[in-house]
Length: 207
Image (cartoon, rainbow, N blue to C red; front, side):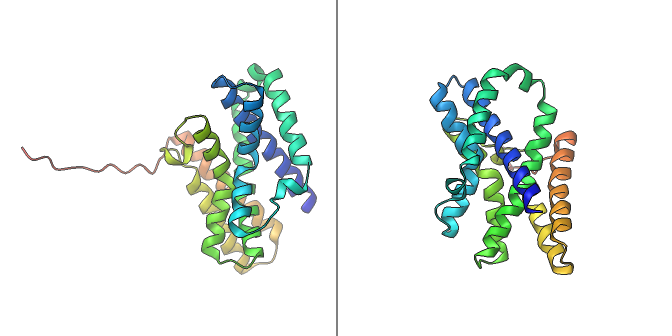
């Protein structure tokens, strides 16, 4: 199980890095700037989580495969930019798969250091979403999780499903798959149906 989780983790890192690099290219960053944005997008969430829970050095610093994947993503982004933009649906699938996996991995790692379930759920969302937040802040874009689109909520729902399933059975791989599917389904349907958590506040104006 650990092998396929590791592979999907690398695939998610690759896709997130591409999204960061493409954003940097769109904002007219140079190559160095694009590499930096690619790195923070791909591993920023996990790094922030590790720092918050006191796990240092952060994960990617102990495995250079993550840096190799990010550098490969930079090369692919510059070489095949137009082709990648035509594959938005495929990129969306892998991005959604990635946030589902990162949510669960972040949650598990936090529980593994003895922190509470609510904190673990928060760290799952941080792992999945905050690389994108850092990317958007650095490129002067309103972060996706602060807009109407359902993103962090899908991660939180997946984390809750995982915690619930862990209480009733010991088949971790099934629990992970079901939790990841929860994130993917909520994310896909919300985008397809244009759902949001936007709350309209009606103010009474004095005439």
